[in-house]
Image (cartoon, rainbow, N blue to C red; front, side):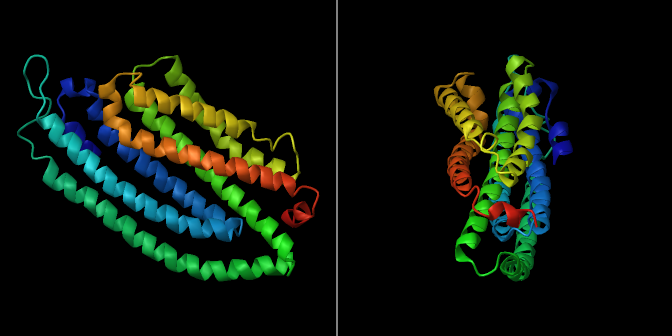
Length: 285
């Protein structure tokens, strides 16, 4: 799909923000697929039944993204086909029948994701029973301790998803919006590895019951950042046309990130309230 897109565009089209629709969507899709693979593997390694279940939901969300990707690529292809540069020349190679084959390829991606989602649900159902028994064996029948463990698992799941949506937002914002290198572009790119470290540092702080390291300061800073960016997006701070191209993805990932930050901050407070109450000993087993 990507190679066909490059062949379809003329050099003058590279200056149009809509020309980045395919690279951005495909980049998000492949990143999501890789993240999903590690997310599911981590759920099995950590025996996190909540995360195993949400891996199935994530797979369905990825399926909906492939459908959205199909619509966005189709819209971009037909929009560029009807556009011309300042000299009146077309932005695409009109002799290339781009959409019929590309549309089928994108639909096949949706079909493959749907099949994998169905298989994952079957596997998750079998794995869940084993993990539930293992949790009962480790924690015992103490209902209060099982609730603390459940909250810990939910917190970890939300934290990892928050990192995923934040990176996706930065990618969508940086590539089409800030494609001309500048200080904000480099700040966004350099923030990705730092954001990726957040889950691991949080896990260490939770296991060691470190109150300072488990503070909600990072979540509050993230919320301020997203509120600021959403205001810019809705007011067209970088130009209405530029944001029009990536508006759907920006609003999608931005809104979900703010929602996850709120839940994660709540989970952080609940986990901190469980410090010095026996959960740490279980987590070290």
